Image (cartoon, rainbow, N blue to C red; front, side, top):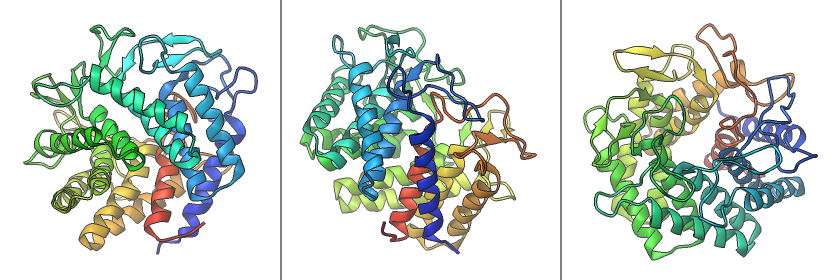
Length: 393
C-alpha cells in the first residue's frame, strides 16, 4: 500500500545529500563528480545537464515545499548556469566547462539547451525572477532558429559552437551518430511544456503540438508501441535497442505535455498512448519488480538495473494505472519502488547508486554524481508521486 510519507522522506533525503556534498566551495557551482563514498573529484569538468537538472530539482522542490535552503541552492545553480554555461557570443549552452568554470566542450547539443530551458522555466515559476524567463525564451528561440527542421519537422541533434555542421552528433558514446533522436525530442518536448506553463506563447504552442505529433506519427512504433530511438534527417528509422526506461518515461511526459495545451482530443489521444507505452515497457520487467535497461538488436538483454529507469517506472506505471484503472500497472509501480528501496538507496552515505547488476552487485565504475547522475529522475519521482497521491507539504 502506498504511503505518501515514504516519498516525502526520500525527497528530503535526496535534496539534503545534494545540498550538503555537491556544492563546490572553492570554484563555485557544484562538483562535476563524486564517487560512491561521496568523495569529490575537485578537478572534474562540470556539465550543463548536471547543473540544469540541479536547478530544476531545487526550484521544483521549493515550489512543493518552500524551505529557504532549497531556494538558496536553486539560486546558486541559476547564477552559475547563467554565468558559465550560456554562450553570450553564439547563443545556446556549452556542453561542459572545466572545474574553474571556463568553457571546455563548446558544442551545441540541443539536448543541453532543452535542459537549460527546463531548469530556467521552473526557476522562474518558483522565484518570479523575470531574467530567468528571458534566458529560457532566448534558448527556445535559439533552438527554433538553429535546430528546427522546417521541411520535415523535428529537431537536429547537435552543432559546433558557432552552429556549423558537426561530424559527431552523439549525445553519448553508446548512441548512434544520427541527425534526429528520440531522446532529444523527448526532452525538448518536456522543456517546451514546462516553458508553456509560464509563457503561453502561440508559436511555442504550435511547436509543442508538432512535437506531440512527431511522437504519435513517427517515434512511437505503431506495431510494438516502443519508441524508435534514432532517425536520419528524413525520419527514416535506424536499427537500435528497445529502451524500456524511455518507453515508460515518455508514457507520462507526453500526456503531461498534451494536458498543458488543454485540448480534449489531444489529451484523449495521449491517454491512450500512455497506456500503450506503459504496456510495452512492461515487457522489460523482471520477476523482482525491476525494469531491465534495454533489449539490444538480436535479442540480447542489457539487464543491469539503472537508477533512472526504476525511477521512471514508478511514475510511468502509476500514471498508466490512473489513466486506465488497471491494477497491474499500480502493482508494477509499487514493485519498482520496493526495488529502489531494497537495492538502490545508499542507506549509509545517502543518494541512490547508479545501478545494480542482475545479481544485485553494484555496477562498477559508476559514481553518485556525474554528467548524467543528477537529482532529477529520483527527486521528480518523489514530487510526482506526492502530487498524484494528493499529499501536501
